[in-house]
Amino acid sequence: MSELFWEWVNLTIRWMHLIFGIAWIGSSFFFVWLDNSLRPNRKAGVLGETWMVHGGGFYFVEKYAVAPPNMPAELHWFKYESYATFLSGFLLLAVLYYLGADLYLIDERVAKLTQAEAIGFSIVSLVLGWLVYDLLCKSPFGKNDAVLAIIGFVLLVLAAYGYGKLFSGRAAYIHVGALIGAIMTANVFHIIIPNQKLTVAALMAGQAPDPVWGKEAKQRSLHNNYLTLPVLFAMISNHYPVTYGHPYAWVILAGVFIVGGLVRHFFNLKNQGRGARYEYLVVAFLVTTALFFFTKWDPHKAARDALAGDASIESVQKIVAARCTSCHAAKPTFDGITEAPKGVMLETPQQIRRFAAQINQQAVRAEAMPPGNVTEITPEERATLGAWIDGGAKLQ
Image 1 (cartoon, rainbow, N blue to C red):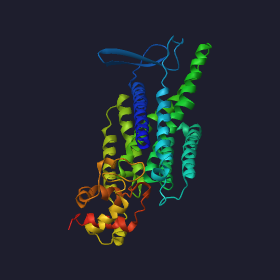
Image 2: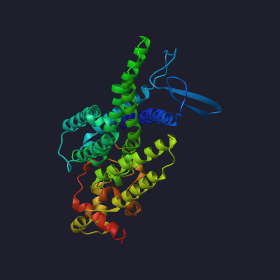
Image 3: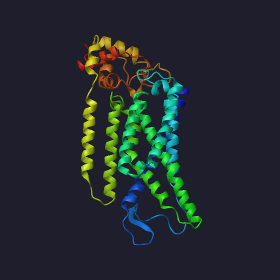
Image 4: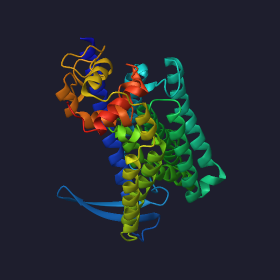
């Protein structure tokens, strides 16, 4: 009953996070597209206009340079999508990684942390990340978008490297995503919405709004737009140990940041009417291809092969029985696991051979399984599994 309850808690929160995220990202993409699609308008005080057609109807939108002369009777705000996405994401982080710290957050091969220490580092890093970013935006560097982007990229890569020295590979990637998500939501809560409220208050008081408020909010909104694709990658990465399980996982994330930025920049330029700059997509494709070959590179293979022992199916089955089948069995015995993850059962030689490729990726190369190395599989045992698979995964 307890395991079933937590399964539904996890599923429900994850579903909520996905729904809220789609709503937030969708509105973010739409408004950046809208800004980029504005065309000149001769009306006084109007920055630009655009026509749209959707769902059988036509829409006409004008954007004011600062604000309209008079406050409209009804004004729609876009903020709760962001808040709900962050709150559901943090709740999911707490349920999965904080309550399950020993399994998903902590990896003693990386750093010997207590549960309290790991959770403390996690929370402090999210707060500190926003403070550093906010100060950077308000510094002289914040006046130059190109310089700010380069410094921000370097800091995110350093964060990815640092998380990789604290947490499990899977948790490190999730925390990069959580850090970016926290910055994006804080931009909405701390800068964008307050500045919009200042503008509204000034209008209602019969005063002229300060253009700086809109300029600052626009800059943070644009940052959120460019950060969206990397944060999406980080949040789905837990399904792909080929990325977070690589010895140089932070390099892969750096490449993803570049790809995401290039793709967003392509669409932003295109929507501005500055032409389809396909060279950005070409570079993004080349970087993605380079990442593919980078993940194929196994820097530890030679050292691992030297540790391999008897690589027969009998020795392999003993290792799997001792280290894997507490979860990967018809009737798992590991606490909290009611069904074999992804239906992968490893109780017979035939089953082990069937899933040899997954074993190689998850347990040998990425060392992502077992999570947190809870069954304490040794480097020698991983090497033996790898040697058996490299030898053709023979049953005799």
